[in-house]
Image (tube, rainbow, N blue to C red; front, side, top):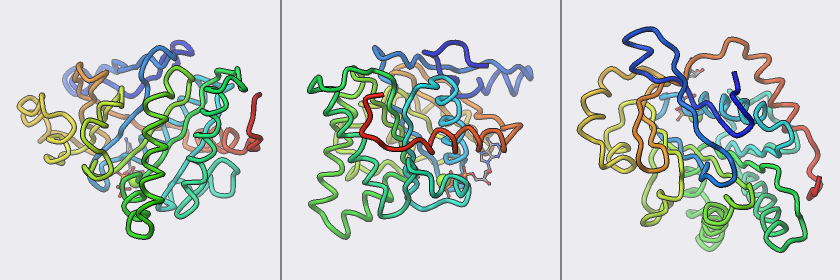
Length: 258
Ligand SMILES: Nc1ncnc2c1ncn2[C@@H]1O[C@H](COP(=O)(O)OP(=O)(O)OP(=O)(O)O)[C@@H](O)[C@H]1O
Ligand SMILES: [Mg+2]
């Protein structure tokens, strides 16, 4: 259940789930005053894309007036149903969505667009995508990373949100300190080096727990301080989830001031 239009349920408290079979929600404030940029990381197969699909669905339900864009670098089979919708791009076209969202931010910053409904860009396999652009065209990669940084730094007050997933948050793609721009950091699975990069202050506790992690389970750091262990949980009605996402991504791109 969605609590309010300013709260997003990320998943469930893993310890309550495992120890007592209780579904205790872990939610995050996504009101404009709060940093709700999300970084999702984990080794291949840990459940990132599945978690992203769920996040997209919950965000759409939370903000029916929101604008959503989905970049799927490797054209994952899981997102096949979204292919062809105007607000979805894969492979070499993903950066087109970044341009659209960055332009929307500009319009809001310049005062030309006074709307403040949330605009969310979700980017699956962000790091692999940037590394591929770097190999092809270094200058373009720098521009892309700069645009992302601008959204991370200035998006909050203008209700523009960035959510990305990657297997490893490599330092070349996340220059020093830039991971701090994410209000919510989720790591799924057992990848030690990923926890070292993203949750260095909590390694002892994570090391103790992580041996028990199954797919879709891991740790979440809220606003850089609060660590919780999380279970993403299953989806009972995949068809409904797909329908909700297809509908949201099917809206035309109009440079909108809707
Ligand atoms: N919480 C979950 N509940 C049920 N099934 C899940 C869950 N998370 C993932 N799965 C299933 O596990 C498989 C792998 O998950 P997913 O593709 O999300 O991993 P990934 O981390 O994105 O991997 P990759 O980095 O290779 O893209 C998928 O078939 C997915 O349906
Ligand atoms: Mg994936």
